[in-house]
Amino acid sequence: MSKVKSITRESWILSTFPEWGSWLNEEIEQEQVAPGTFAMWWLGCTGIWLKSEGGTNVCVDFWCGTGKQSHGNPLMKQGHQMQRMAGVKKLQPNLRTTPFVLDPFAIRQVDAVLATHESQRSYRRQRRCCCDAELC
Image (cartoon, rainbow, N blue to C red):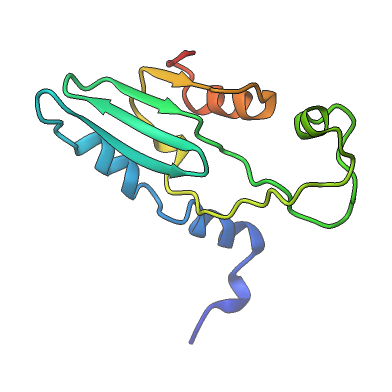
């Protein structure tokens, strides 16, 4: 008999996300990069992970957020980066459309985190997960 009644929202979230578990984390750690080359993985959205033949790991624009999650407030918060860039007030539909393929809390070695644009929320999340890395 199934134990459906024992499943809570929290237990479901913790057992389901990130969707890929630590699969990609393990793949990156185990990858042996051939001399004169580098390896690259897409992390979803604009994020990529680069690994050199010497084992240097660089995480670029790994978005640890979700985007919009509700229709509750139809307007952007005052000062939101998209509001400043585009001069609009209505929410843009930037829902996260790709799964989390990397577990940020299972990252064991990263040498640098490169952020190509300013986003304080994203920066704080990346620092929490990659606290020993150099932020560029």
